Length: 141
Image (cartoon, rainbow, N blue to C red; front, side):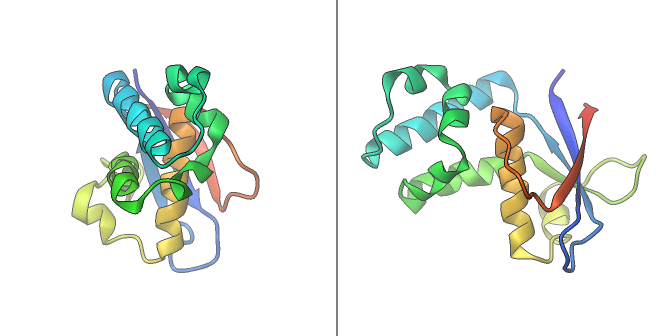
């Protein structure tokens, strides 16, 4: 069963109080995503040590979300987009979360998108950071 996390935005702004669900990628997709991140970093000249390269998602957790600033945008954008694909908008409890363009139309602050992508990174890697403008609860999907 894939892990999922329900997140409610608590930061001031137009998205405050909105709830989103982030669902973990399947194992094969997650491993591919992690390896693509590691190779993008290595190709950008970031010294990615062999132990991290072999650790996949766990290796990315050691590097943290700052990894997205080191590689070229053209290489990292599809990887960030894949994290965004893990996010769905929850309009009402008991109803299925909205994905795709329906979800996109619900986000009104660009900062919310960044936080949700970082939350997806956290769900997949176990990396955590303090001061998040989100509240969360683990779900089973």
